[in-house]
Image (cartoon, rainbow, N blue to C red; front, side, top):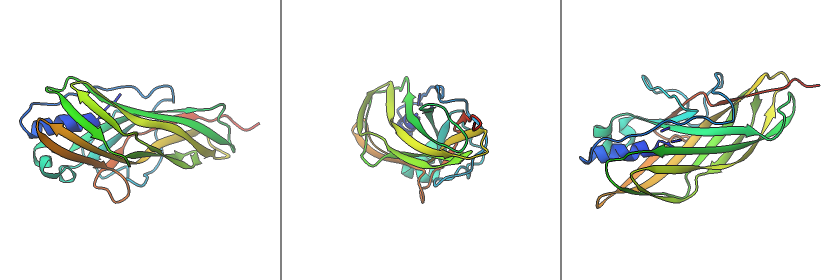
Length: 219
């Protein structure tokens, strides 16, 4: 989704389709100042694979197979929800040191065919991890919020995390390794709980190369 994106909203658009309200529409955003999307890095708690045929052109995407979406999944099918985040270091990133990184994520969906009311429920969160060039992880809560209209923007949370940089690192790669987003949506008079669970034990997985931060050599 490019959810500039938690394309969480694409999910809402899909719910509209499931109940005969039309197709959903989402737009893409950019990763921001944190750096360009980089390769490398392994999977986290939610997993970075298990999604044959799915692609992701955001810093991260939540992939949910139809079986993870409840009754609507038979109509919606497999769902890829882009999640755009930035990772901006506070100061220089140097080999063998610890760096504090500012993290923030958003998602938006535009031009929905009808007005939608939705709430993001407490307990939703995103976990960021260093998957190459260092170690460390941090969990950032997604704030409770009410969304309304045909153009929806989701605040997927912001905060900081400390990461230890390897002594021989040339790049530090930050990826989303777990995400849990609980939505309570109203489509007309129908109350529709929707859960995107790419945490440990969840039915969704994660895609995306994350953000790559260049590392300076130690003096």
